[in-house]
Length: 97
Image (tube, rainbow, N blue to C red; front, side):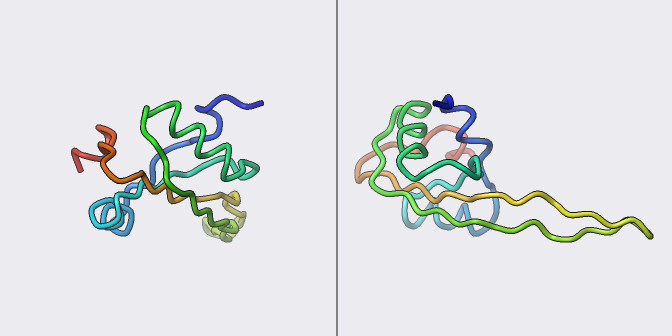
């Protein structure tokens, strides 16, 4: 069993992520690629002390990147949209954006 901090890697702070936070009370995180929706839900509840209504996930394949004649691939990653239950307070990191 992984710890909550190994499952939730970092918040995704983009225009789309902040828009979803404002309109739908949803947080966006980069999570471990092998994490399940249930593990993500339990990790968010444990770290932020909030109640989660639902979790949606999306897998993103790594893109090819070049530096001159050298090429390589970025790693694959997984994004999770975590919707909070009605009446739950947003975690602090997301309020200051």
